[in-house]
Amino acid sequence: MSLDRTYSIPRPEVVVTKFLLWLILLVLCWPLAILALLLYPLVWLLLLPLRLVGVAVEGALQLLKAVILLPSRVLGGPGRV
View 1 (cartoon, rainbow, N blue to C red):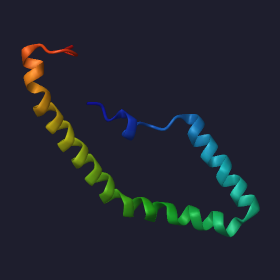
View 2: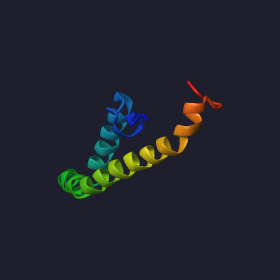
View 3: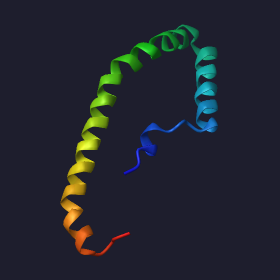
View 4: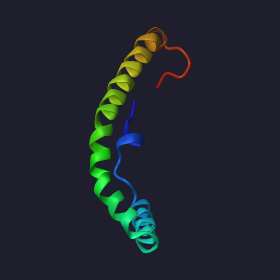
């Protein structure tokens, strides 16, 4: 039940790659790069409720999985840790 795959801090390589791609876009088409820079926070705010719904759905599915697998864990079935 780990959420680290979705909510972890991005690796430095990923951040540097995104920045270099933005710099290339800035050189090739600076109005589009500035527009992307200005619209990014707005898009992030618009997608925030969807992220919250995703967290809630993932939590509900993890709870359902735990309830379904509880009898096998109690009886010591295969895969018990």
